[in-house]
Length: 367
Ligand SMILES: [Zn+2]
Image (cartoon, rainbow, N blue to C red; front, side, top):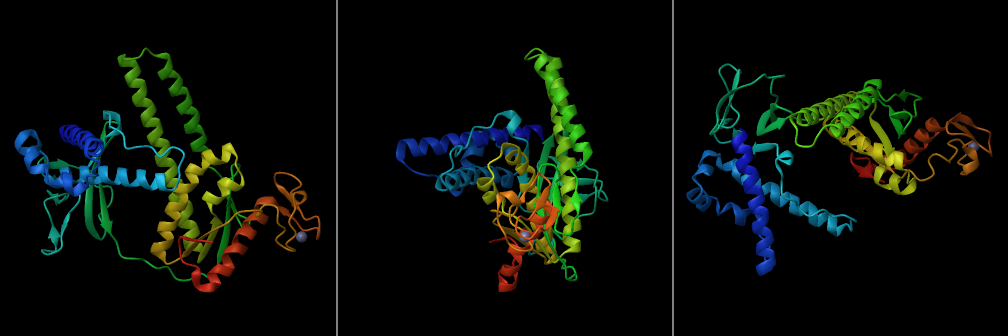
């Protein structure tokens, strides 16, 4: 598997070089298909590539193609740093992919990823029957299999096609305001706390990073410390994902409609460093929320957050003076007093409801 990683990474870098050359010398843009057609010739010239399954090699060029496409789309959007596709060093190449696990004609597994030996092993073409721990049974129809190397461990990640599972209507709608002090505040007055273990994990990470910088470059002890940092990162990543999944699951189970602020807009409205850093976490939370909602037949609506924190939800009066402190809201016009974030969550919900009634309340809608 390490050898497959090495060969696919070299192929990626060669493919990138080929594309750059083709453009520089002939002004021509190669497609993934153009490059995939040359694979047979490559295998003749470099027999070691005969030891890698053909779909895995094809996928390398698909990945390169995606890197180019997202580069061009960033250029189109006028991003400041569009980030041209880069050559991959060893640390940035950790997986390979089998794109077809299921034969639709036969209605059975292909050779890729098929469980064998009563589920104790899976079949990985050109590599063999590899022992695995199946953490949970596969659901639905397997589509693809990715083999990932992460901090000294190997993972098999299957993508499966699972039928939608709509939930019964609850008749409830909720607005969610995300913040830095609290992870989220809902219009029902619920305060979702940032879990303490994440804070502890981050503290631990800082200590380990100091250890790395103390140790001599290129030394064995430094390499080990780097590995520790990578493991600490992985742990935080997993804990955060777990927390996101559980929080999103609860919202989706309890409400038919969930409104939140549109983060792309909110970054422009409140340009605040602390917020933009934690926005990274919220973006993946909203992605998880959207996926769960789509599967359950719920609506998630992102609304423009402008002035949601300065508007009185009772009389509609807008003014900075309404926000008497970070947490207190006191309307200068009608005297309505409430927690400022709960008031904002209500306004977010209020903006989503009219569009839901217009019939545009589909998930992923941006108002
Ligand atoms: Zn008011």
